[in-house]
Image 1 (cartoon, rainbow, N blue to C red):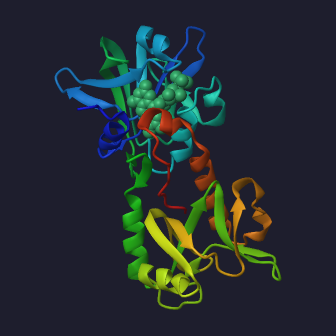
Image 2: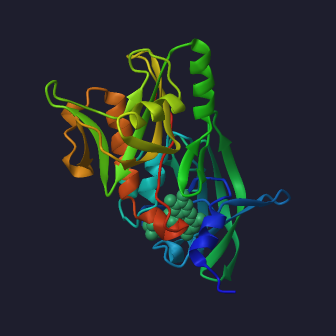
Length: 306
Ligand SMILES: Cc1cc2nc3c(=O)[nH]c(=O)nc-3n(C[C@H](O)[C@H](O)[C@H](O)COP(=O)(O)O)c2cc1C
């Protein structure tokens, strides 16, 4: 049987992991780090953990020879940090807040937990180095973890915010982010200078996914809602907003058009929460790095905007 690498990567993507940033310093004190989800706890006595570092990783030699390194377990609000540290850049730490730990390795501000480890053992295995660390110091914070599944980020807190919002009986707006060839489908209300996504529930009318799909199918657009991309409470609109990554088929209704990511006129999107969400979405969609490590999955994001 031929071994199908793409399918294999997809199978691996079914395993839910957290997301960590592995950090250390160069001899001159320059902080270095990369995003890793291969973190696993190995032993309690002594306390050992492991991470796997790919041969493609710029920091491989540095981590291999480091005396200490840290594992920063990200919280759900740190998607940007995960994306940043998944790029082969030299100046990643200029973009974030961090401090030096007891053993002189970088600790990322706001991490859900961090572990300072002494380089304990290592083994080359295939195209990765398995680096085993002996945990010498650690710290825990409250909050929710950032999780990674099937090439996408997920946030457990979404469910909580959804339940909280439903209990509050607020208005629910359900919308679709319909993407095709680096473009998003908008309703272009040129008279009022407004760009809007396909939604249901903005005027307080009853909303659910079936109603959203039916509303647009009545005007010729067939929407397939793939999965929840973002859930947030919009205090200004007094609404819970749930946006789905979606695909659109058949007719583009009158007044709607696909706008290229680069051509979106952000001034025309009045809802600032929507602007933040869409900018993140575009950044994710443009990210090539996930594909390198996790296969050719398109990337997405499900995060609570507060
Ligand atoms: C969610 C996620 C998990 C990753 N996990 C690992 C990992 O466990 N090991 C690894 O070597 N690279 C992993 N990567 C890829 C590295 O973060 C990426 O190659 C990065 O560019 C390495 O940084 P560097 O080249 O500056 O050293 C992951 C990327 C993402 C987005």
